[in-house]
Structures are given as structure tokens and as C-alpha cells.
Image (cartoon, rainbow, N blue to C red; front, top):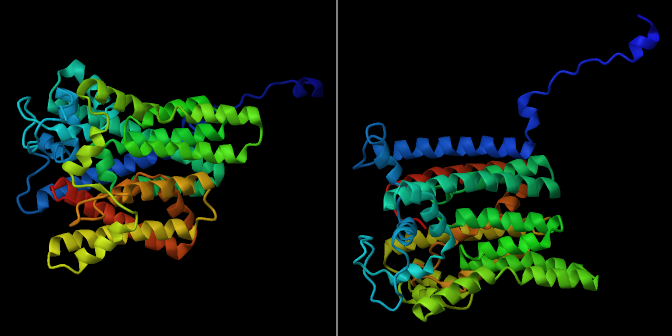
Amino acid sequence: MSVQELEHTEVPVAAAPRSSRWSPAIREALWIFLLSRAALTTITVFAVSKLPGGFSCWEQPSRCVQTFFRYDIGYYAAIAVYGYWDPRLPTTALATNAPGTNHPESVVFFPLWPTLMRWLAMPFGLSEGTVFYAALAMAAVCLLVTYWLLYKLVDEIWDAETARAAVFLFAFSPFAAWFAAGYAEVLLVPLSLAVFLLIRHDRLWLAGALGGLATLTKPNAVLLVIPFLVLLVETWDLRGRWRIIGATALVPTGLLGYMTWLWWRFDAPLSFSHMQQEFWHREPVWPWEPFVRVVAVLGGPDKDPAAHTLVDLVLVLGAVAVVAAVCRRLPADQLLFFAGMLTMTLLVASDPHYPLASLPRHLAGAFPLSVACALACRHPRVRQLVMVGTLSLFGLFTALYTNGVWVA
């Protein structure tokens, strides 16, 4: 064979390994998802079998899964099966979800998540059991999407190492069991991440539409206007500004739509806010007042509220400290989004005996906290401290949740 023929001979290229055809974001998301699922399953099996009054998950697997059917999940299941109760009716305890009982406080829980639960469960028959399993399935998908989007966002701004750390810390946060169980935050977080990513890629109208969907999950999703407003401040082009304003206007449409439906159906457009105060004793306060109440609770004679409040206080202060430590490295939109989540939750204080109740869980759903922790973990000693603390609380809170001990 001549030299010219050799030069034109095509050399077969070996096929790339199957795993390399997947993007790093997908591979990392899938790995962390499987790892966290294995950890949750192991902790649940151990917790429900070894603690007093426990049982064997191997002998009663369905009962083991049912340990995640607690607290807010009961409301979502009731709404998915029976719909909303009239908020003008008297309230009864949520001991049963039978049609004859009244749960007007259910309007506090926004409609998108229970509606999706209902749609997915309908082919299998509507019951509390089927909608609960539908919630578990959707939560798993939402978490996988969350890990993927979080990796993509952090990798675009920083690097792959920081992205892996952020995904890991979010997946193993102390409140991971609540996301896995099917709280509405599991849908809010991927929608929020999608909004931030789409804004970075200048797909503003789609970002605004997803922001509108997000406000059908939780009222604090209205804070997704923040990344749009940051972009508006940074944009000098007049035509571009009008486009940003138009996309921003889409964000509160979900909230306004729910209020309109409540007004049409029950003549009570703000009933979701009123029920927070009447049933859960949450009232509008100045953002520093919950911390004033913390001092009173910690100095009071009741040990149980004091213990819960102390744990909440340590978690909240720890989260704020981490974000403050890396605030100069966080983008303005993420920093303001976290600050907005913190402030909005503080403005609606909980029961005076538990002034910071659920606040750490709400902050865990604010993805910039995981990003801040990942940035802080670049320092070896900080990484050791954060990892030990996060994994310890992950195991403890999961065990407590599956055994019916109220944490958040």
C-alpha cells in the first residue's frame, strides 16, 4: 500500500463508553439520587425496627413506606381525593379525612401539587393510599430533576467540584425526608432552579411562565421575581427592560389565579392567609420579633418548646452564618432570593411557644443555601465540619420523622 493510500485510509474509532454519552450533570444527579435513596431506606428500616414500639420493614414493607405519610402529606392527600373544604366552615381535627369532616384550613396548601397527585393516581383509583404513592413517585422524579438542574446552574457559574458538593449537600440536608415524602417544596425547588437557569440563558418568557407555576405550589414562590428584578437593574436597553418587565409579570399569575378561584368558589380570596393565623396561630410580625420570642421561650419553664426552639435557632443561625461568610461569592440574585425566603418566613411568625417552627425546613428549600455551603466547603476544615453536621442531622431527623416525632 502506498503512502498516499495510507493517508486516505479511515481508521475505525472505538465507540465511546456508554456512560460518557451522558452529561456529567445527569451522571452526578443519578448517582446522588441513588445514594441518598439507599441512605434514606437504610435509616428508615433501622429506625422503625430498633426504636421502642417498632416493627420489621421486611415483614411489613407497606407499613414501612407509610411511615412517610405524616403531617402536611395528610392534607395534600385529602385535597387530592376530596378537594378543598369551605374555609368558612368550623374546623375539626385531622384525625380522619372522611368526606363528613371539615378541614377549612386546607386552603393554606396551594393546589398544584395535590392536583398532580390526583391526576397521577386517577388510573389506579382515588384513595389516600394511591395519591400518597403518587406523591412519592413524583417526589422522586422532582428530586432527580432538582439535582440535575442544581448541578448545571452551579457548574455554569463556578466549576464541577462545587456543583457536586452543592448537589450532595442538598440531597443529604437534614430535611431530606420531607422532600422524599412529598412536601410541595419538592416541586417548588426544581421550578425555582429552572427559572434561574432560563434567565441566565435569556429565555425570559419561559422563565416567567414557570415562575407562575411555582406560585401555585407555595406563596413564597412569588420571590422568584427577584432574579428578574436583578436583571432589570443590570439592563440598560429600553426594549430589553420592557421584555423583562413582561416576563416578571407572569410570576404572580399562579398566586392571583388561586386567589381568584377562592373568591369565586368561597368568596374568600385571602382565606389561605387568614387560616394561617386562625388555625396555626401564625401572625404578621416584624422580622426580629420571632427572635425576641425565642429568648422568652428559652428562659421559660417548658422544656419541650425550649428544646425545639433551641434546635431551630442553631439551624437558622448556622444557615445565616454560612451564607454571610460567602456572600461576596454568591450572585446577587441568589443572595437576595435566600434573604427574601428568610425574611418572608420571619414576617409570619409561628405559635409563641415555637417561634421558629418550620423555618429551618423552609430555608433548606432555598437552594442558594446549598450553594453557599458548597462554596464554604472549599476550606478543608469547614468541609469536615459541614459534612459531619449535615450527615448527622440527616440521619437523626429522618429517624425522628419516620417515627412520628415532630421536627419541622
